[in-house]
Image (cartoon, chains in turn purple, blue):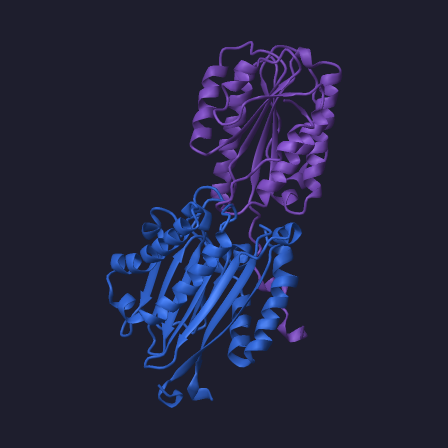
Amino acid sequence: MSRDLVVQIQDLLENPTHRVPIALCLDVSGSMAGEPIEELNRGVRLFLDSLREDPIARFSAEVAIVTFSDSAVLQLDFQSLDRIIEPPILSASGQTDLGGGVLLALMLLQNRKHQYQQAGVDYFQPWLVLMTDGQPTTEEHPKAAEEVRKLEREGRLVVFPIGIGPNADMAVLAMFSEKRRPLRLRGLNFREFFAWLSKSVVRVSQSRPGEKITLDLDGIKGWAEL
Amino acid sequence: MSSASRSHVWLYAGASVPGVVHEQTGKLCEDVWAVEVRPSEAPEVFAIALSDGAGGARFGHLGALLSVKWASRTLVEEFKELMAADALEARLRFVGRLRRILLRRARKARENLREFACTLIALAVDSAGQWIMFHIGDGGVVAQVDDELTILSAPQKGEFVNQTFFVTDDDSVQHVHLLRHQPGTTEPLPRAFALFTDGIENLLINEKNGKVAPVFTKLFDWTRTLPKDVVEKAIYENLHDVFRPRSSTGDDCTLVVLVRRSLDTE
């Protein structure tokens, strides 16, 4: 190509990348102590690292982490992956305020969308990943579930309810989605789950208008009890 | 009409490259464009149509191909009628008919119309200085009016970035963006137009603040002054080497340029 007919970078606009906001809403109650919480920490780290390795997702995926035990706690607010130097190290104790955790995650997602709108940044449907190993110990989960189902029904939220271990209350998790039945993690396959999740985010970040995102069903077999 | 009686001619150049994601998965480039010219009678009409087959539609590429062929031909054949019709009639005559054509094709193939979903940008100009544009879906159109670059039509999106409108939608007639320029109006005739698909829209315009990438001035100058094959090679290579690696979507990239060159300067 003739040097005279080359487009320079400064000839183009530098618009913000389209974003995929993902809220991880994670159970860190006392029953998660020991190996489960260690595996969860490794899984979260792997999730962030895998997203960073993808050329499109590394700029589009934004992750927030909310944990719930005696109360809901914001562990990591939404930000681009490059700005997360070290993910929070989660520790387990206390009860299971699942509803409080979900409501906090929804509020964060709503705030983030508002920030995108203010900044003129385009975005995909937000994702909510809900993981628990037990039963809620507070009364807020029906209200939270109703709100999640409403957003899902309107096509404004993608929900992944995941049970951890044999004591996870799958009936409660089922309240959070009308489109996707809850899946139970096989053993402590957190890393396999988060590897699958990062691949799914990559698919979304590369999706085009009108495209129905098909999740890697074979990949689910690697981490879920089916 | 002989060129001696005209004050200007329209020249075009364009190219497509498959997006990174399509190339990785071995899929076809689903962007398609077509050009039609009616030089035989006065005033000469020149039409360009550009379409992007929807990602999730099994026959999106075919829908796009049928759409650009029909749209470019119809614009030159019915330019006068489409210019004269009221806005709703023009929408029905153009997009409504195209949708019915795709519906017939889908029924013949025993497929759902959604499987032929595609966007459409169609623009026609005549040598008398009239122009008409239909746009449904993402992608966009930029014009050069005097020396200013302006967004003529911005991508149509819902709340989420992967939501847009298609020719095949039930209510596509309502969503189509129609612009027309009649002689005698005070607005000057653009000196150039550029049509592009969503693979590169993020690098070219910001519809929220109205900014347009300076690259268009360069592309318009090339098209006005250099042979078409040289410009098309340059557009292709720049799409491949400069635009595509910076595409935020990894989608197919298409850019078509149409410029008015004054014959007085020849």
